[in-house]
Image (cartoon, rainbow, N blue to C red):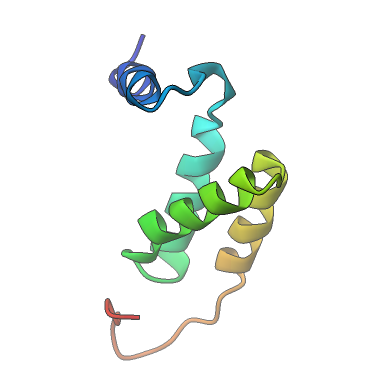
Length: 85
């Protein structure tokens, strides 16, 4: 087991969730895409939004892919990173 596996297992136990249903790779890919193409603080916020969508019945992998595509197509803005939004 990796440190990530250990963390996911412990966090799931704390929240009474099944760790086998956690799409770790998809969430990490999504966070990477948002952090690199949009804005770094957007990564955890987007992961939260993914969780909200999944809680409402959205497919985790498909939703992560949609959001990742949106992030990768996000226009590059010159002049630095706005961390406030």
